[in-house]
Length: 269
Image 1 (cartoon, rainbow, N blue to C red):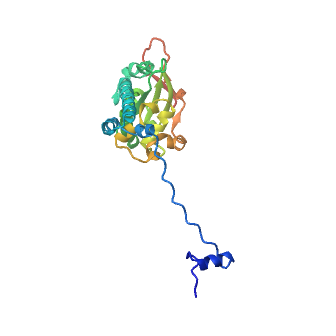
Image 2: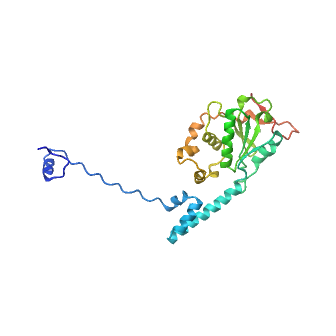
Image 3: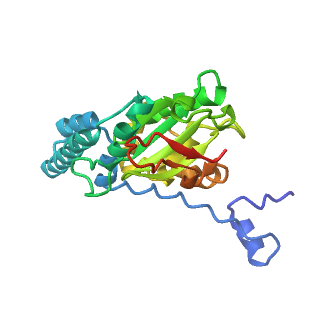
């Protein structure tokens, strides 16, 4: 008679006792359900509208007060952000506007911000018809709307720097506190760059700041649910290994006396 060693019988128990059949495998325990996340973590992931709706539905007074407190804090924070959100698009400028719209604008402290920090300004030198320049322009329009506390301006490359070769297009010059922090030359010339790569570089150079753009705001904008795709910091290492960055000394303001325009540059070809 064939014996099924997996059956739970007295006969099999006797066989196991004498080592004739192997011990019966233990029945795996049903895992306990994961604990519910703290209320604060749940509320942090909700939009203002969702917070308001949840507050109307909750019957527990303590929870309702907690939700209303988070809602008030979120409203106050968003109002503060709105005060600082002075820009939101790419502003075209001319050569004569450079000092006022770039250098001087980068010295202005934002309302309620750190005194003396100034404003991040990204000056984009472009040329229509060059694919990498056109692609970067589209990326900058997206970033300008996403980070309205940073000023983005654009100017045709050879109108800013005479005889600027196409091989150097596009250029991005990053300012803060009246100084050139860094620059990107021929961005995307080596390969097609993604928007997130440019976002990471601007974060690293201090032109934009993570606090300017909340994670739930990106979700409301219709961003991907994949955190690795949406979070620029997730690719910071790979993006910065080939950024086409150049030291700020390659392009700098003219120091000629009597000339108040810093759109004149000494440029290393």
